[in-house]
Length: 237
Length: 287
Image 1 (spheres, chains in turn yellow, green):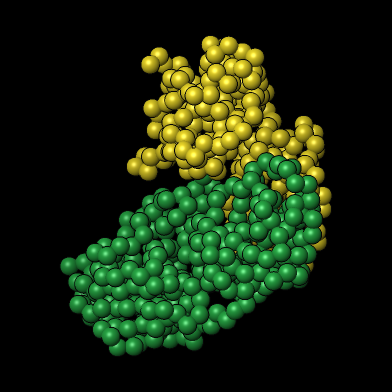
Image 2 (cartoon, rainbow over the protein chains, first blue to last red):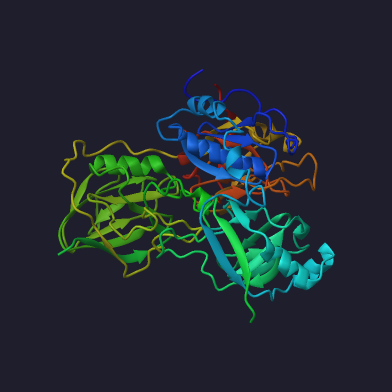
């Protein structure tokens, strides 16, 4: 079949099993893209590294998320060619890049971005209660280990940070705030993140930074590029 | 003196657009660009401009500009709107020369939603992240046009136009859009409702997406959460209320609701010409 690749059903909608590093599942996504399902964010980061290092000529945009990667076909390449090329990617290929360092995802070997934070967020007490830690221990856990930018997508300049202290896993707030101030440092699920500009949001706010996360007059405009390592540093207000 | 178009009257939403930004999804920046890419490409082809030259996407309500600094060659494509130069009808989908001081007016199209006012040399405003496109969701790129704005016109390309007019399209309702099933079709009880049901583009329709009203697509397991996934132009996402949203040019880079089907790329331009209130029909694409 050539041209429009519109073959068949998408198959199961079941979430993939976590932590099983088998072949990724490739789902149809129209006639110009594919959705690749992986077990968890660790596998996502690893697989995307493998795709980028393979430098495949049918690959257009790559949109990472928590368990999936959307890959579009480059102009002029068919989605069938894209599918064939992605099939050659070794999902374990980039594993060695993470074998060192304190956290699986923390040591990207790249640049380290330090973000100064005042731990004065309105949800700090809630996070302490939810995690069973004291507020001081929350701050120490957040600053104690490096994070890595796994993917972006929520807004220009927003990076989902992974690889932090697992004790900091907290749910989103029951109700979203209609406006979260720019520079808010937040936690949700196993992620941390910094709001690049004022926007609605449901994450738990633990602090504030003056770091400019997004600046169009800067190249690159995003402070946090995918793959970068991030360290939060406490500053006293 | 640099040639320019000076905005004299803005009736609806008028935005500078080109073919958008590529490869920036990982920092949260989507592609954006002309909602009807084919119409922009056609305009640039008629004018012998490069494909990526920018034009003005003119919404319902029209636009009036004054030519300054020297004559320009322009054309209007997309939704077939009346085009006037100094009050004289010249028609869309045709190359027209307008001298300095003359006024170009784009009126209400007979059908469709978005016309493109393109000029030989392109609209040459400053690019942002490699593109002159306005992304209304990310609020990136040149601000929506307002009275008094001056749009510089770029240098004429060396290539000469070889065709001076083409037949205008007609965007009769209902638009028929081909769909590819998946990836998350099993997250709704009956994805076949998309092709069986009658749908209407809601008033909540913009460059981000077209919300469709019709038989609600109930989630198979209400309350079940899908982790956010990458999104793409043409995706049909179903929020918990069951009213599908078809993502257009300025869609979010990721979405948190299941995408149950995706409109084939060639039909997304047609979707961008559907007016709020018009019926829409879906069919499954055949391989």
